[in-house]
Image 1 (spheres, rainbow, N blue to C red):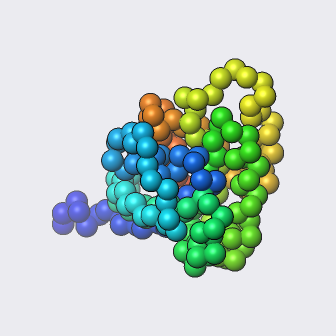
Image 2: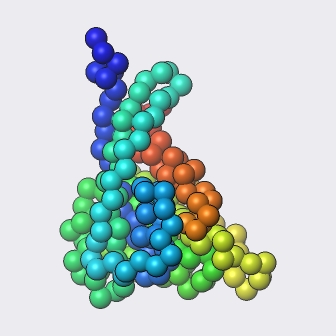
Length: 190
């Protein structure tokens, strides 16, 4: 019996959403292709990324996880087409720009879409709060406080909160490794 047959293959649908310009597409290029794209074109509707990850747990069980990551346009004019794409999502990444407080507060504008897509309040769906552009954060107290972030984490039932920089790569692998393990262990109760 080959080792290949002992690997459990799993696919999970992940949605990343947030306001336009928070760096969702740049983050996904950093994660999937390990490149920093200084400028990307505005996402029209949705874009799609695939990443395969091999994971082993403490019981020596092996998994090949395929993350099917849907990148949603942040501009409101495209949202009317997105509710169908949300259906069946098992992970929702709520992204905001750490250097622009308004992008954190605008996350609440996505609740209606999440409800229409049937994932808001679904215990099978994991929510992750993600602060992007960590490299642009200064010590300015007028920026986003940890208290504000924690408030939104609780409001959106986010399982975790991470900060990343697509430019330097800081936190990107750690964040997606956490998402990947959450997608496997959520169903398996490991």
